Every structure is written in structure tokens, then in C-alpha cells.
Amino acid sequence: MTMTTSGEPGPRPTHTGSDPRADLRAAAVFIGAVTVGGVGGFAIAELLGIGELRWSGSELSAITSAIGALVAGLVAGRLLLGGTGPAMAVRAPRPLTSWPGTRFGAGALIAGPLLLLAGEAVRSGHHYFYPAQLAGMVSAPGTILTSYALYTAGLVLMIPAFLALAGLIAHERPGWAFWGATIAVVGSTVRIFQEGISFLGLQLVGAQGLEVATAAVSDTYGAWYVLQTLNGSDNIAWAVLAIGAHRAGVLGWVPALGMAFMITHYSGVLKGSDLNSLTGAVLLAAALVPLGISLWRRAEPVSRRVWWGGVASLTLLGAQYLLAALSGFQTLG
Image (cartoon, rainbow, N blue to C red; front, top):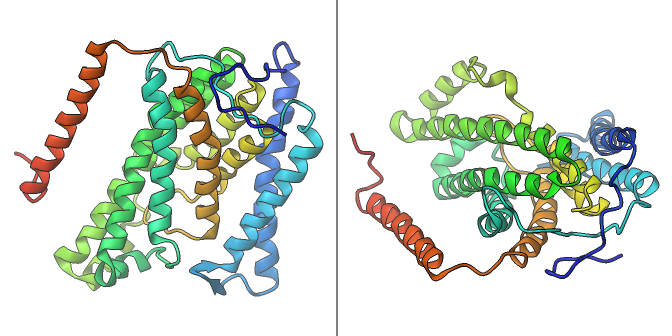
């Protein structure tokens, strides 16, 4: 098995002109295997009566769910997808010709997953699921707020990362690219909105005290909002893009499976981290970071004007953040 991350031509996609039914079969493999394996692992722990026991901040049901999803996905992928190209291949076949562009797209593919992983890692080892996150604002506010800051930044960068990935898929599989990008952007928008709800809930602890904040969040936790029906779109997007990337020859079935594992990730308000969510973030970074590096190596040299424009933009962004920090992060107006 080989992994291609350089700018040199890698193995050519083997899917061009294939029967569309093969794409649907691949969809069943990725979504079905990971979902059934995850649910099965969870059910086993619950049936044995050990699901709520914890190890390193994770309930055993979450651990067995992660193991079940990985094992089922690996077995199904090896049996049904193993013959469709190098299993470990990671390949950016060409530069991007549309937004977000090759360099920005590559940077987002690298930084976005790493920020998500960092956000998960900061609070890993703690059972910070609701309402424990609110209590965590009393005992470890730095941990909670840092993890949310990193994760939210990662979600924002994942939008251009999704579009970059879709751009790589589009030449071979335009349908998967279109729907994958569409669902992913919608899902990321919902998740960012939910992060805002979580942030407000956490701030209530300092403003009104833990008891009042917990009561307020509990009373409004199930409140309807206009994006509620789209909750879980991000989970579907991971699988759609993973399938498209595999069918287009961008990802071998192993890194594609790692990306598809994110369908088991928690979505919603005030969700914590455990072994399952941390595993998903690790596998996502393992799939997309090498792809970002491969895409970066495809980039053409930029002019001095473009280079200094990028430097000026980063300087302006840094100055804005510094100004906000010096003003105590008070909003204007």
C-alpha cells in the first residue's frame, strides 16, 4: 500500500466511467458499515450493563461504539472496496481553479482538521457533556473556553476545506462534489450556530451563577430554531464527501473510511469529548492534512504582489485581534 502526498503524478483514478450503481454501493458500504458497527458496539455495552462505566472520561458505550464502527468499516471496506485502487492513497490530482484557490484551500485542509483535533484534545479526559460543561466553567473555565475557541475556528476553516475537497472531486465525480459541498456547508453553518448557543450558555454561568445558568439552559435546551431540522447535516456530509473522494481517486478507501468515521461525531449544543469523538478528529486529520500538503505542492508560484497582499491580510487580521484583546473583547456599538 502506498500513500501519495507529493506533487508528482500519483496513481490515476480508476473510477472514470464506472457504473453509477457502484457509487451507490460504495455509499452503502461507508454509511451502512460505520453506522451499524457503531450502533452495534453501543448496544453490546448497554446490554452487558457496562455502558455508563467510564474510562479516561469516556463511557464504555462510546468506546465500544468507536471500536465497532472502525472494525465494521475496515472489514466492509477491505472486502468491497479494496480492489479499486491503492488503499492508502492520498492525492491532489490538480490545482484548484476556483475559490478557495489552491493555497488557501490547502491551508484550510491542513489547519481546519488540526484545530478541530486540538479543540477535542484540550477537553479530552473530562466528562464535559451537558450539564457538566456548565460546572466546568466554575472549576476549569480556561479549558472549556479554549476548547470551544479552537473548535469554532476549526469549523469556520472547514468551510473552505470542504469546498477545496469538492473541487478535487468535481473533475471525476461532479455529482458527489456538488452534493457533498452543499450538505457540508449547510452542516457547518448549523454547527457554528450551535457553537454560538453553547457559548451563550457557558457565559450565563459567570453572569448569573451555576444554578441559575443550569436552570435556564435546561428550560430552553429543546427550543425550536429555524436550523433545527438541519441538525446532523454535517454527519451526512462527511460520508458523502468521503465516498466522492474515494470514487474520484483522491482518497484511498482507508483514509476515506477515516473521514467517513466522522458520521459518528456528536452534533448539537454543549456536547463534550470522549474517545469516540477524539478518534474521529484524529482520523479526519490523518486523511485531510496529507491531502492539504499534496494540494499545496500543486500550487503555482505566486507573484510578489499576491504574496505581499497575503502578508498584509494576515497583518490586518492580527491587528484586529490585538485591538479586540486590548479592549477586553468588548464589541463595538
